[in-house]
Image 1 (tube, helix red, strand yellow):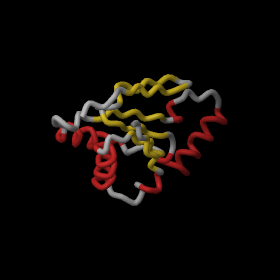
Image 2 (image 1 turned 135 degrees about the vertical axis):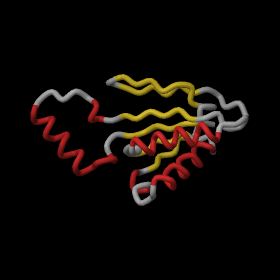
Image 3 (image 1 turned 30 degrees about the vertical axis):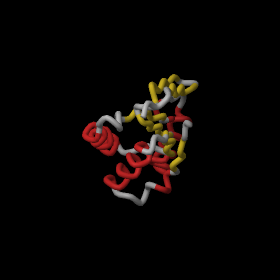
Image 4 (image 1 turned 45 degrees about the vertical axis):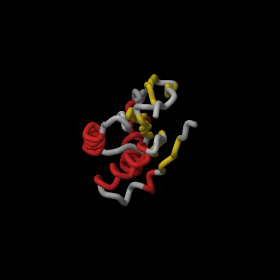
Length: 125
């Protein structure tokens, strides 16, 4: 069975980087796909990947991660640029979302401007 767990930003905002990473790794090791509101800081994402590499073994094959960030879309006019700056100030790391899944289940995450495709495979325990 495929399980997707939504993690609202409010659930991780009060945690320090180490606790955030531990929480997310624990969920992924339970073979769940995480849909995280917002995104991790760049150093947290790098640390998550580093910790994952250290913990790979016969049972845990690693993670697949993808960040969908609306600020990466092209700004078409000045009004949109001002709106984007305002949203960055107000929302910060809450913008967009992050998908994190165990590599044993998530085969690939494809992104294009209009959609995300999450390709999965049956877990081989």
